Image 1 (cartoon, rainbow over the protein chains, first blue to last red):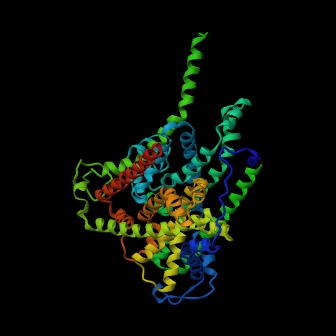
Image 2: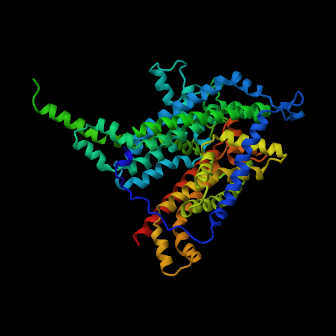
Image 3: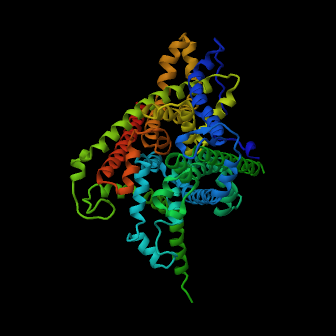
Length: 299
Length: 274
């Protein structure tokens, strides 16, 4: 149905196809794709082969031998299922909160900001020019036990431990904040492309504003919603900075486990198996999600 | 009985609130976005009592006047700038070439190229970092600035392709056709029409690459060996308490990049008016 609605932007004007050398586009692609092939695709195979290796001795210094140790995978599931689950729950919650915050914000910029549109877009992205770590660290100060926010919320008796810092709340808040522009920008792009006459038409047909939002604006912005939620969920699920800086010892995510297994403990096979399982589970979740969102869009 | 005026008044008030609700919301959201920046800036003027710079003690310009008090901070910034410059140049060239091929040419394997560009962005950073580390370990490479640069160019490429592609797709192809109608050959069409029009997109991609590379912690942490970039320094310092000099650098980064973006927007607007 969506495809039948005339879009405001003109149909893609097909540029004349360059004649001349047929190999030319491949020459343009070669250096970049070769780089990605060697330093993105091959590493994934290295990761796979490492994840199946076994210990040669009793310490990591003895090295690892090529093998087919499926037990690395079964162990990573049984030992760290809690951290996997927590990563997906935290990332899912952060994605929902980011959507709730970003949607009205993107709506405001796309429809209500007038001549300040470009300035507002810059302002939305600007905080993310200050380093990721420094920003996250600043949230430690904002949410500190003796800070205004913590005193206020704890005063309402809403917090089980009377504190925000070093709890899952702080981790989810940090994830929500840090990945917000990845949600806002695709939403804005989708809403900005939307023809305002469609919303007016829904008003003419006696839709109230809520019906208009739910049945016209939101469905038409769905591509932005899908892009934004993916761009937020994927990095959030693999993040360990927020859990490390804002969470307590019981809030560790799978990223924390992977980095400590790789860098501190140096148990490469286990760490590689953990990373591979993370990658596969994200790919599966994303595929299911895109399929479902895709079919809903067609309805 | 209520007078007929009162409900009218209150409904006018609710109408006003409803009309402006989204504006209030926008302001609140911006305050939320800027809260950490305000904290970073304010605490750059603090003279912390102990090691941790998280409770306000006393106004001081010391950190601003003495940024390199701990020389490791400044050498870390220097390392980060060097790495980011090389990664930006490499990533921007490789990515722009791909973007040109994707937008201006039809060839076999276009959709698989698009997929290969998308995949690194859909892979969590821990997995990118870990898999590169697995490769470097299997090859027996020594970790250091080179491995960090290799990794940074890898993740910059996709972002450059997406940014430059958007610019090229927004360009009117008829301009290039007009140049060719006026007997410009392919090379001079590219040199005098396509490239100048694409340049803002390429510049934006370069800026994005620089800030992605400068700011990266997760992937760098896997592949840096003993090299200390600025984010690596901040991470190490966070365990003991971040000195106010880090806030100074954070503040400079923020206002510096904000200025660059605003100035470039103003220049763009002035050009459009001409």
